[in-house]
Every structure is written in structure tokens, then in C-alpha cells.
Image (cartoon, rainbow, N blue to C red; front, side, top):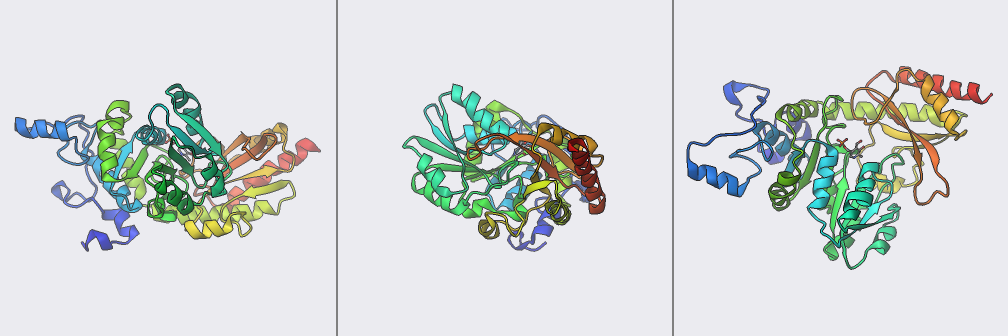
Length: 393
Ligand SMILES: Cc1ncc(COP(=O)(O)O)c(C=O)c1O
């Protein structure tokens, strides 16, 4: 194979970190073993004390050969020195945050981040003496103004959950670096194919690999991508103490999903763009929140720091009542009512949102376009919107 440095992204997805499998297997085996034994006590003692990210493996809570392949591949895709794969995206996020904060730390957090992350700051971290200021984040100054002498961490999610607001990653990381503040970003929406935050100065990047990376709605997984030094520290503390290890089989499912990532994403994107184009013209629709729109309010920033938008967006009905939202959702057949996204199936989830800049909460409907035929999805949405008009007639 060519030098790993020069491989294109599609070749990385298929082959990187998978050389020399036993018996010439083209698909790496699942090392379904909780522990690894040693011939020599010195080697055993060294493995335990060094707790390395790769071989020698000694215990699958810390490292496993199947998991290691996926970690090296995701690290390569994200341009990270190292990656640690965890049992869930929330596990990865919690470990990333815990690796930075201590009692007395202050954090600046994007207010429209994934809701359980916000709740983590408001509950567990608050109990441990970690405070947080939630900011809009669309304008970097809102982040800068919230920073205090005791700020240790800035938490970004760009685009953010449900409303898909962007943060200027380069501006914020430049500011943070000057002050020794660690930046963490959730890159789940974009995947390494559509946004490279580490190259823009972010210190720690996290994924819910449950979504596009695995891509088949059959596994939960999370990934932390950062420096080798930070991962080594997390292996000794957060990964070791908080557990939440990923098993070899779920990791193998992520590996299988990664093979088609670069085929799936553009398909989700073109379907979502067709659906959004149709929705925008519908008389029952008030507005669509989608990063790919030509009139997206942060269009310039989108073009600067992202390469694509994939299948996720949200919209509001003109009739913003809960009853209208319920009628819409009930009438859908193809869009399944459920959390998560990133798999083959289209999904809908209504969310009552109350970001900092809205005086009142409003119902927002998040749609995820799977791999079905776009015309069928549009017909399904037409059925939903028809039900709204019937209900309010
Ligand atoms: C943006 C984002 N980040 C993180 C998570 C958490 O990931 P997981 O469900 O794998 O724990 C989710 C889950 O929906 C998400 O949407």
C-alpha cells in the first residue's frame, strides 16, 4: 500500500489500520476476549503500569485489538494523534469534560448543545463544584464575554442540536489558546468528512459514533479524538474509572459502517436538500433550519468551515401549537417517531425549544432523511402537512 500519509479518504475508510490480519482475512476478526494473557511477568507488569492505547493489550476495558483498528482509523480521519472509542457518545463527552475540569472550574457552553450535555453541566458537574455559563455562540463575542479567570473549558457543538447554529471555530480556539482554556467540540453532525475542527485548533473532539460513523442504527458508540498525551491521561483515569468501554462486536459494527460513510453522506445530503426545497415552498411551513440553504443566516461561516450538510435539519409549522405538531407527526408513515439519527431510516422528533434569544419556547420539528427514495419521503411529509390543515380547518 502507498504510505499511509498519502492515502485518500476513501482508501483510509476501507484499509487504514487493517493490514496483516490473520490468515489473510480481508475483514478483521472480532477479538471477543475480555483479557489478554502474558508469557512473561515483566511484560505483564509493563503493560499494566504503562496502560498503552494499543498493544500490548491486557484488558478490554482499556484496549482491545478490534477496537484499536477503529480507533486508529477514526484518528486518521480526524487528523488526531489518537482516538479512544467508548460505549456511547455521552460516555465520550463525559470523559472528555471530566479530563479537563476540577472542582472550582468554570465552563462556557453553547446553549443549544445536545440536551443531556447541558443537563450534565446543570446536575452532576454542578454538584461537583463545576459551574457553567450557557451562551448563544453564533457570535464569538458571546463566548469571549462569558470567560472568567477560572474558565477551564469551552464546549462547542457546531452545528448545534435541533437549531443547527454554528460557532466560529477558528476565532474561538485562537482566543482560548491564548488563555490556556481547553476547547471541546461535538463533531457528530459533520463527521470527519464535512468538518475538521482539530485542524482549526480544537483540543478535544467527540463523536456520537452511534450516528453516521456506524450508520446502521444497530449500535451505540462514542469517540474521543485528541493528542496522544491526553488520550494516555484518559486511559489512566476517565476510561479506567468511568468504564463505559465499547465491546469488540459493537466496535466491529462501527468499522463495517465506516466503509460506506463517504457513499452514504452525499446521498443523505441530496435527499435532505430535495426535501428542504419542497418544505420551504409549503404554505404550512414557517421556516426551515438547514445549514445548506443559500439564505442560511451563517452561510459565510458554513462555507468557511464546513464541506457539507448531510441529512439532518429542522423546521417550524406556521401553526406552532402542540396540537398541530401532534397531527403532523401522527400522520407520518415513513418518518419514524424516534430519537437519534445517522442510520438508514428517516426519523422525526418534535422538540419544545427555548434558546436564550427566544422570549418563549416554540415547537421545532427535527427531521432526519435516511436512504429511502426522496419522492416517498416528500409524499409522507405532504400527508403530515395535510393532516395539520385538516386539524386546523
Ligand atoms: C449531537 C449529539 N451528540 C451526542 C449524542 C450522544 O450520543 P449517544 O447517544 O451515542 O450517547 C447525541 C445523541 O443523540 C447527539 O445527537
